[in-house]
Figure 1 (spheres, rainbow, N blue to C red):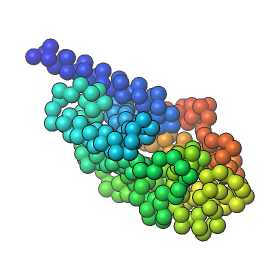
Figure 2 (tube, rainbow, N blue to C red):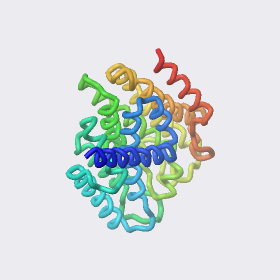
Figure 3 (spheres, one colour):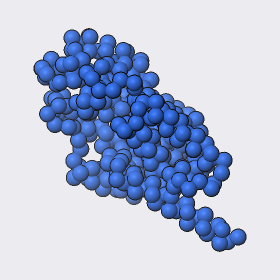
Length: 300
């Protein structure tokens, strides 16, 4: 019996190692926060990230038709549900995710929504001129909720919290992160035929989809991008309410993640909202400084 248990433990440890490698390789901003967590929580976040990364890759795979991508995403959800019922899966990501889901009591429907959120980017339009994906901010908020706020709701289960108010603040912080992503990636998303800023906002500022996609004229685009940046800034205010509601051992990780993401928004503003000439990013040196400061917070 002990041999069987030792084999199962080795298999699980290997699965988490695979997830940590995926997170370390791909989560260039979030992984700095992961490093500030105790090992078990770091493992769990790595498993969630690896699962989400797989879903993202499926939803963006140019080698498949939209219908094939949707089928693969549905298959991923079904595979996860099978893994919940049996520990015999050979998929290291699903094995680690199953253990994390049980260890931290993560609702299955939240993990399902992680996959369904990535599926919202699977559209039948292939190539061609960019189009505005969302008519209103309410529609964009719904998208941001599914691709980012749900991630936050999963994360706080791993972080640990007692006050249910943390859930609303985590939702709002996820919106801030995703709005930052959208602003940073306007140029790249347009190249894939996607304009995420609401059409109602483009019309309000007299900006056409073609102008936003091309980045010209920049003087006409700045007021629109500045408006969206301020909207993101308002959602970042939820961080101050959320931080004291999660377990102290997890607070440095959340602080570091938010510092890095808010730093991207700061960079967009420092570039005078020109997200076309240079991609806004936080330098590795700056992220390491945040990490060091985060370790200092752990020791307090």
